[in-house]
Image (cartoon, helix red, strand yellow):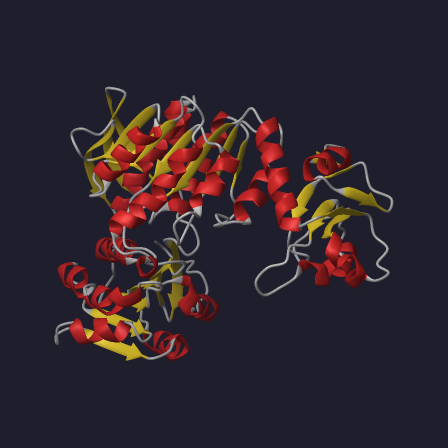
Length: 474
C-alpha cells in the first residue's frame, strides 16, 4: 500500500507520542469526521465553533486509521479505544507536519494571493499544469491558518507541482502562511477593495498582500498585475525584499506577459498575448476579461516552472468556471430555457464589476432579460453605503434593465439606480428567492452575485432544484 505518511514520520514531524496499536501509515488527512475516508488520519482541531475532539468517535466509526489529539483533551475522550498520536496542540502539530511535507518535496511550488481571483487562478493553474506532471492544489478556498497547513500536510512526496492559495483579511496573516509554503513563484492577482473595513485604504491592502514576497525561495519569481494602480507600491516592496525576479502581466506595453487583444463571448473568449517575445492566440473555455487577465499570470507561472507550454495553452481551451465563480447552467422552464450564472461565492467591488460584464456579454433569447441578482458585499466597513451605491454605474453602462436586490446594504444601490430600471428589492435573501422562483422566464439570463455570508447561494440552489437541466436543441 502507498502511504501519504508513515506513522513514524508523522510522529517525528509533529513531536507526538503514540497511544494504542498504531497502523504503519495513513492514506490521507481529514479534519471533518463526515467526509473522512478509510485509512485517513483524523486531526481533532478545535475551531471557533466546533471542537474536533467531540467527533473522535464518529471519525473512528467512519474509518479513521488513527486520531491526532491534544494532550489536554485526553481526559475528555474517556475510554475511547483508538490508535492515537498525542500532541501539544493539534493545529500546531498540523503546521509542523505541513512544514515537513514542504521540506521533503522536490515540487515546484506556486502561491497565489490577491483581492480578486485567487481561487479561479489556483484552479486554472491546476488545470494547465496537469498535462505536465502530478499536481497538488488547495481544495476549495483552503487559504487560511488551517487551510494552508492542511493542504501542505496532504501534499504527496511525489508531487511535481504544488499550488497554494493564500488569503487574508487583516495584516500579518499572509506572512506565517507563506513562510510555510516557501513558493518558487508567487502571484498577486490584483489589489482591490476587499475587506476594506479592516484597512484604511488600498495602500494598506497592497502592503498586506506584499507579505507573500517574504516567503519566496532564494532566486524566486514574483508575478504582479501591471495594470493595477498599486503596481508601483508592490514593485517597490519587491525591491526592498530583495526578490530576485519580478515579472508582470496585463495590457500595459511594459508587461512581460502582455495581452495584445481580447475578444469576449458568452461561453468563452480569445486572447492574443505576447509571451517570451512570441505572439500567441489563446482560446479560453471560460468567458470574461477578468479570466483572460488571470490567464496571463497562469501562463507566465507555467513557463517559469518548466511546464509543457503547448499542453498548458491547449488546456485553457477546456477551462470551465467553478461553482459559485461563474458556473453556468441552462435550465428548463415551460417549453423553453433560461441561463443561470452562479457567482454567489464571494463579492467585492472589482468582482461585482467583472460579473456585471459577464451578464452584459451573455446571450438572451426571444424576449429574455439580463437580470442581475445581487446581495450585500460584506466587510466593507464605513465605506459600505458608498461602495454599494456606486454599483449603479457599471449596471447602467452595461444596459442591465432588471436588478433584483437583497440585504440592508443593497438598499443603497436601490436608491442610486435610475427610475427606468426595474428593481425588485427585498430585505432578506429568502424573500428574494421567492421573487426569483416566481419571476424567471424563458430566454432570461440570471446572474447571482454576493458575498458568501449573505446566503445568496440559496437562490442558486432553489433555481437548480426547481428547474431541470435543459436537454432540448441548443
